[in-house]
Image (cartoon, rainbow, N blue to C red; front, side, top):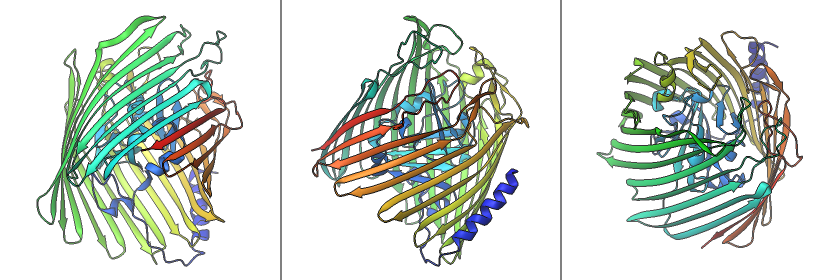
Length: 589
């Protein structure tokens, strides 16, 4: 069936079961990174947004931020030696990740993606995660073509609190975490440390040595401030063993060390005008070793990103105007080569009766890519407070990184057009929605596929798809269902882009049994292709988890990932973890 026929059939089906209920349940607004972009629910009522708080994150049983993302619908993860996100079928450099306003996509990335920056995010320090699907370039700038993952870390709660967490599991996996905070009306201070290690498995299926590829990471952060001002400093280190995909030595490992300082402040100038300020600086060094000998990196791979942003929120009647200024600089500290981007953007939100309107424009002045103007227009309409129709059209702009420009100084920026239509329904029994999207990019980046990793502009990339979701509660069981159909093709290519399954289904069932809180998750993915158009079989994973409240202070957790011990591959000749069993304990002082 053609894509347009699928869209029509799905829309008719959704409308048929959606209008069966006459419940009067107003729309639930989802805020878009309230601390750093806008505090109005208008954008959240239009954009496709997933929101998770600290309890939601803990319930997944994940050890790391990467493991958490693996459980989220519409976020395709490839967890080889370089972690990769394919949101809505887009390439990995089309998803922007920010923490407390700081961009985590490193300037030394060879493909512009967040890559190892994902391992720097301390999971037990997260207060909220908001995943905005679709273009967020007007508000967030480059790398936000397919989506934005915005993370807000915790502040010190009222009083003194300490939490110690330990987990032990299969493949000698160990996790230790400590957080301590003190807070009052005058301010707060919070300290967090996390350490995770595992012996791993033999990643290459064609390797007979049975050597294992271990990994370890550690992160430490201290954050202090008041309700209107906070400053944080973090240090992170990672060591990842990996196998050479080009047939060389398997005795290789990579280290990445980084540090981040972030400052956020806000000032209420009047009853209608508030100003927010953000400053961040991230330093990252990567080093690679082969057969125990230093191979590359060090001072030559020492990069720094510095970002300064000022945002004004101005209330005008029943409307909100956001005006922002942003300057970002990526620099190779040793060679002093750098690129800068100076942006000015404005966003207008207003509600007319039952119609929400959001429109914005961003002017980009890039030292290598030149000048560009991007814009978006979104609207949503409510019908009888239970049915909502949404529509978004926008453009985006993705600039090459220093790492990409080092191989091709003539690399041009990507430009994209994005369209999305949505239908949402509140029922007496729950919530259902359907989203249809179509993205088209010009001058798309692609590597030559060799060890040199030289990038070039290859022409067009088209991604389109349908997202279906349903949430309900039946007999005390919380049920979340999501299905995503996606096609991703380059230059009118007949076959799907590599490592992008066309169909992905998530089903999560949760139940509270006295002091037990249990969840079952089923993830089903269709077949996909790898380099050379090699077919990778589809697979189904079953993940089980349960928490038991020993007391108000202590919780014990059991997690079984890939309970059926399914053997599968997300990349040709690379093994994936089999069944993993993990037992953990959280204790609050």
